[in-house]
Length: 398
Image 1 (cartoon, rainbow, N blue to C red):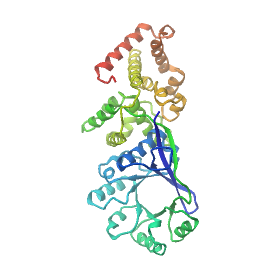
Image 2: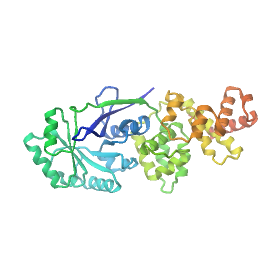
Image 3: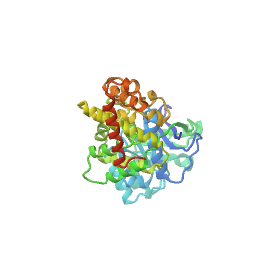
Image 4: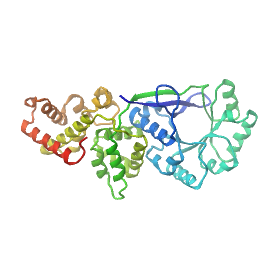
């Protein structure tokens, strides 16, 4: 099974308490970054952090620092991220051109914290300095005797938070602390730690269709829900993202309808763009996905026939009934990372409650033990066959 990897390096206060973590691209368990495309690297880190590993697991209640590129800043891809959890680091190769300044101004007005990475003061960078909440000075690139003046000049421009990065010794730390730096990062405190977890790839056809449909200015969250529910992997990643973005919330998500409404069209567009950037491929268990969609539709049809007030919840149960096989994890572990209602969890774990009863009837039909179900064999068979036809006619069969 594929794995997601994220490097994590803590950022400390003068009292050496953790302030936040910088999240870094990693392609393996080793602590080395190996990438050529900065856009892809940033998107991969974000999707791994929010959907595969979970932001809460990586940073708990601290801030997450993430490198950004010119393209991601200008095209609005980052707007799906939660403003109160992220610090957007503008890389040193991003110039203060009008498009960048406009994008940063909008992000800052929206509530994002803007940082300048690997910064060495030059007069031509002052337009960026004026928009920055935090500046990471590249400690080794500045002569020790010039550090105090460097910090003083940034303070004159209104910079409230200065972070000394690449601090490697006790002497480095004490020097940067004494000249007034507010935060510190480097090997003296901690080398990046690589966090990994099983990774699921979404159906690239479903993601592309979602991106295409989201270009319609009149599309509604209900329309988006109809697209997303056609792919179990994509549904899972959306719910994981919503849960990570609102880490610590007591709100429980009972269906894709709630998740899409909570995200809103604008943020869904940026999330879909992020998914495309992560280089989704066709490596997926096709039969499992077909099975998930067939179960989902069958559960929904059976719920409709029993006059359930929320048939979309039954669809969710059927869709997620194969997640343990897709992720190669026990269902208990999978559900711990999803903000689902208790009734849905019970249905998936114990096949209890009304949703669990219908799921059990569908599973019994598949295994030829429908006589053990409380729902009649003919009723389940008709719904299952109707679902297979729906899957074929919708063009989603893989």
